[in-house]
Amino acid sequence: MTAATGSAAPPAASTPARQLLILAHRVPLDGAFTLNDLAGGAGRLDEIARAVSTALTLSHDLRRDTEVAILVASAPPPAARRIRVIGAQVRFLNPDERSTAALLKNALIRSAHFPHPFASSPGVVIEAVDPLAALKGFVAQPGAVWLDEAGTPLEDWTPPPVVRAVVADPSGPTDAEREVLRAARLPTLSVGPRSLRTSQVIDIFHNRLDRAPGGTRSGSPD
Ligand SMILES: C[S@@+](CC[C@H](N)C(=O)[O-])C[C@H]1O[C@@H](n2cnc3c(N)ncnc32)[C@H](O)[C@@H]1O
Image 1 (cartoon, rainbow, N blue to C red):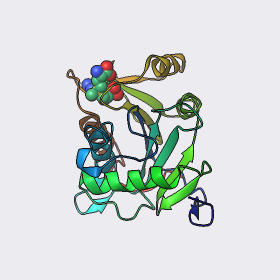
Image 2: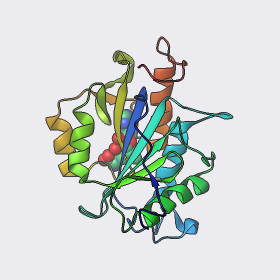
Image 3: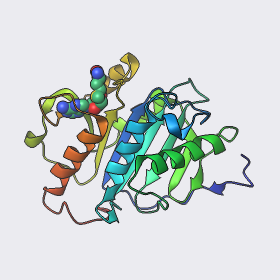
């Protein structure tokens, strides 16, 4: 991948009201996996893709007020990547997990030798990051929360105008990530008494936000 064949990252749009950061630990960073083995060789990309689809799709529509970022930290910097899928801009996002996984795989392959932010397809922006620094930066922003089984009940929390939520893949946060999350002293929220799949947690979280005043008004609070 070279600068000539990638699109420059689009200019920053207005702040999405809902931002999700998924911590992913096992997806091969070079994109060298088959879409026929998403749960195995692709490092549980099946669940990541399902979570992205859940985060951004409605029935016959998209959640344009939502951005989901996947922090792919299966190798140390500079190999680690952040893939942002921007609800207001994304194209070619279908509800099935295989085609969503294909968008993410395409981003990883095209960024292999190109660490600067660029759009691998419309609304999908990938860049090399230091995962712990990226996590620290995300949780330092207003409205950040950590979705975790041991948190306080979601019902007791009042959503701020811009919500930034961290959720992990099926292996859960690493010790180093937990340390960053604890040090940030951000609200830790539980969506229920059972340990759920990442995609299920996102569904429940969206539902809580949808039920808040103004929750179904799509767009940005700016
Ligand atoms: C399948 S769970 C990971 C379970 C893993 N054994 C662990 O120790 O974290 C994936 C992620 O979903 C979120 N999660 C799962 N159940 C949750 C709950 N009841 N409330 C809030 N978040 C939850 C957490 O972010 C969790 O790390």
